[in-house]
Image 1 (spheres, rainbow, N blue to C red):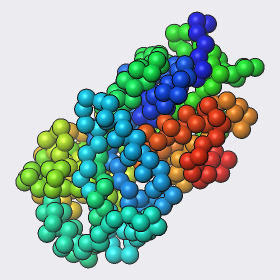
Image 2: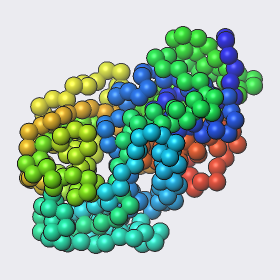
Image 3: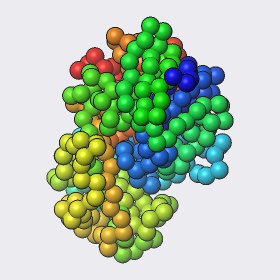
Length: 375
């Protein structure tokens, strides 16, 4: 054993990088351990663009966390040399009276968010890239947009470094165990001790927390970037980020950014749970057909040649809500897991929450619905 730290963070992706930065900013001596590169494309914190939105159909309780997340992303961006947050507005659309549209309205109304209901025709008139069925309706919220996840991670790690944290990439954690005065973490390089441990290991979280085995389940996800036939309709200033509920499922997408195509995905893509160390990482023609057939029907002007396909991982809980808690038998261990395909936008505030849990054992943020014992 070479070192002892105040806190060790296992997994330095979106959540772990933010946690390491918050811990280090508070004066903690922090070690972050990442089995891959920083950043990398093996987990859930990549993909060029990741959505952020205040109109949150998943549950109104997320909105206070989102407000804080926006503040923290803006503060992080102010210290970084590249833009992290792009505001395009957000659109939630689907059949009138459906759960996505109504849930989005509910979150806006409960939290007094500015929003605008639009008919399909009104949406197309304002943003011609949208050509949805005429009976659909939409909720437009002006604060939505996207983050650039790889740069967000770089910015958080830079912040952690400036505050004195040690981050080690290409060092895989083999195991951890509690000790009389903290924890001991074994890697394929060395052994370390700390007073506190934070586990933000994404799809691998259940490898380190037995209670997550049936709670945080990895799922294969695929994204597509398609070249629009009229690219100007799909630029960030003319094409808000969107969620769309259709008979084929719930889909989401982004304007053109860095890749010459607009990005689309289907939540729970083909509903395939996987071993994160052994699954089909290369997208297939079947993956492409699923996403292309959707685009041809609902975004026909965007369904040009494929520019890019990429896999990533969701880690889903049974109720699609997060796990943010300390372990009941080991209160010196905090866990952030099960972000269920909609977590990255929260990474800035989740880092703050996990730092609270690690150092204080509690947080002022409203996280009651994310307790581990609800399962």
